[in-house]
Every structure is written in C-alpha cells, then in structure tokens.
Amino acid sequence: MKITFITVGKTEDAYLKEGIDKYVKRLKHYTRLTIIEIDELKNTKALSPEQQKAKEAGLILKKILPLDHVILLDEKGMELSSTQFAAYIDKKALGSVANLVFVVGGPYGFDQSVYERANDKLSLSAMTFSHQMVRLFFVEQLYRAFTIIKGEPYHNE
Image 1 (cartoon, rainbow, N blue to C red):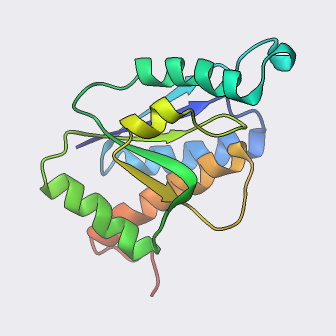
Image 2 (image 1 turned 135 degrees about the vertical axis):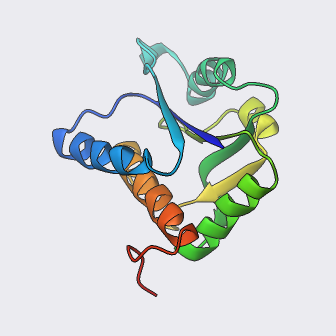
C-alpha cells in the first residue's frame, strides 16, 4: 500500500522539518510515503475564506486519483487512539486499498467539493494545532501505527 500526504503550504520551521524528516526516513521501512506540498495561494487579501477554500480545492483535487482512498485531517473527523489508528491503517491495507491519501487543508479548512470527494475524516485532537505542527504529529502517528501493526516496541500501552 502506498500513502500520500497532501498539505497546503510548505513546512517552514527548521525544527519541524527536522522532525518530519526523521519520521519520513523511518517510514521507508514500512510503506511508500509521498508528500505533496501545494503552494499557498498568493494575494489572498482580496479573496473571501470561501473563495480561498474553493481555489485550494481545485489544487488538492488535481492531486487525487479516482481510486484513491481519501482521508481529510479535519477537526470534525473521528478521533482514534494510536492503536485504533493502527487498526484502521491495517484494515485498509488488508482491504486492498492501493493508495491512502491524507490531506491537510489551508487555514480555513476544506471546500465542500473536497468533503464530497473524501472517504473519511480524521481528527488528530480536539485541540487546534498549527498546520505546520499537524504535519509532524501526523507522520509520527503514522510511524507509530506501523510499529504497532508490526508488534515493535516503539508504542507503550
């Protein structure tokens, strides 16, 4: 199974990039992970939040293939423990999902067209985090999920 992680905007802080790189390297032992960074929109002061979401939606949807299983990282999504997330990933792999696509939207979230294309929504927490930090938290949880699936000692119950 392949995993694609789509984000709107680039990770700018060096300490976050370092952390993300650490887990991306570790994940190479478990899965093929592709990270797609969509450039943030320029000159957004003249655009309403709805217009920004619509423009971002077009860029996001161009990166998604018809057979991809799309999961939005969204504050209204289901909350899973790390072991539940591992079971979710494992179930998708066993269910012959070829490509899981996780998406982090822009500062205003997702346009309705992206919600309509999504198969699932997942919340990393009831708290709100910066889009920069969410990227690190997600790749760490993805790594943790694979170590749980493999029965390796990274995760402590």
